Picture 1 (cartoon, rainbow, N blue to C red):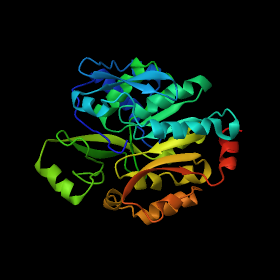
Picture 2: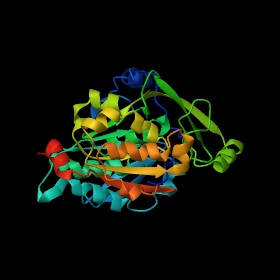
Picture 3: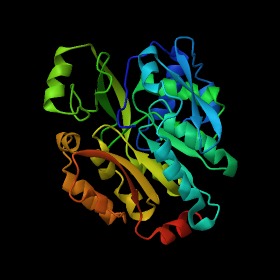
Picture 4: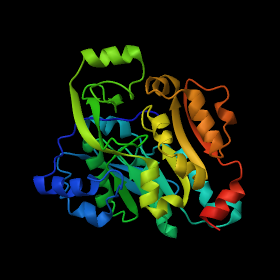
Length: 318
């Protein structure tokens, strides 16, 4: 999960499907997720995608990803981020008790994490809400939802940020360097790893831009009550995590997930205008134990737990 791949895919949707998707994304301040039945209406094809089976130990079954040829090598192993998924899944048996609750995947990519969690949660009625802004990647994710018949997965096609008046944002990606992506108007920006890599990206490869609807986590949680009952959440959006947290203050102050899996990269956060100290302060104020972030690391993926886990569990799954 440390690398998030964004590549141009040849999977396209027709004008009717594009209009249908647009109707859901049009009002970014009242965001709506696409449910399974909604996705069926999009007419998504997998003809130019490659299928890849992943073993999900937490559910003791396989799940299938649909990826472009460029992404095939990245998912060459038979498992994906098993340790993180297993650590998160333990929340549903906290205190030796079977728990209810949902999972929120912000930065869903092609669904490698979301599908494992969806297979796991299917047995107790839990739901998975996943966010993927980049249209070609979102279509791979949606193809996987349909072909796995995962009716408990709901997809948001939005860029997640601080909220405000902006209804959309321009995202830039590079076909030749798919590990870099930007959510900054006008070109390479918030998602890029460093100044050196930024210069390389400007000189090599073909940049592709997409204008996508923007929203905030606060707006999502206000519109969708299931997001107020989260046992766990993943936040991995290539350096824009700090901006997303700025748009999640109400959500974190009232209904924070009991465990937050978050990727933090110092240079990316700073480049996005969100100092690490601000990020840590906000997470601590939301009730998370942030000792693992002291001193702030250069980069890493962390599981942050609510300090008062019993209180969180009593709220989400009494």
